[in-house]
Length: 398
View 1 (cartoon, helix red, strand yellow):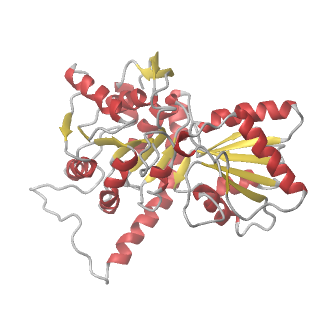
View 2 (view 1 turned 90 degrees about the vertical axis):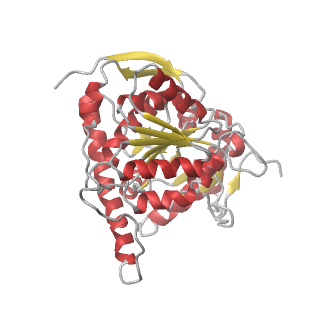
View 3 (view 1 turned 135 degrees about the vertical axis):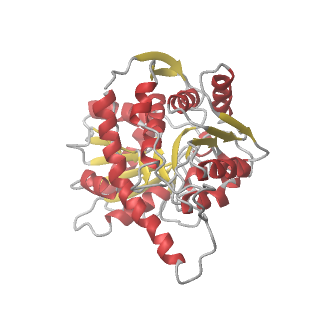
């Protein structure tokens, strides 16, 4: 087995995606430009023009068409990629369900962005949270290095015959998509291709072996077909962990399905996702110096939800403060991840209190001081035994 040779490059997360896609040797890229995703496919176009990547770039007239083209390419056995954000992801929404229902191993990256109206080109996770039930495996990265590694893992996960579901890899628009970090990329990408070997593991359209993909299903069979996606998500949970562990053994980096930070002796746990976790870690270190027993938990895997690992991590804690970066309109009691956590903990005999806090909407700045003040508020509620059963919208002028 050949050893990988790494080279250290200054890359933003968009470019980290492009390098990973190149190193996975994709066949077809279909995309439509939208801020802050556009430079992903611009860099891939550059790789193709320079002869560094032998792939077909399909320029389409909309994001709906981009995913439609990716579906068509994957249906004949091509390794495919697309990228989008915000309204582009919403325009794709119909096709998200078709891609997963056809069991096509497409990989897509999302530079997360707030949804219109009013128009906002800045970051929050409203777009990603709208895809919760589309049957796409969803990873959320917190560094450019993790973006690169996760895209590579995504192809291995999606194309596993136990899974055969599309995968999204999400990261903060602008905060990560346009911020440069040191990233180790493969100097000999053939080693990456050994990790993601070309195997046509899914049913494809072939004139010599005719099949039909996505025919009409009457009430006698539709339920069973959709239940197969439920089973595939369960299998994906195991495969995601297997792939990440193998990636760690082979390349020296692994991430798990959640990331823990100083939670062993913590009474209070701050749970969040994406690039905000870096700020949370800094805030935790500062609070620890003041004698506050607080720790952090980062959700890396959003779908399928890592329920077992979350339960084990919050067992014995007094309070979990969920810092959501999207609003679940009308839910009233919690943001999207906080709702998921509450549901997951429902049957725990002794469960911590949950404080749901929405932060950073439309890329409203969230500082270490904000995290400390939110933690202090949570401690006050805990002491007074009155943790509110409603969402706190932190930082909004109201």
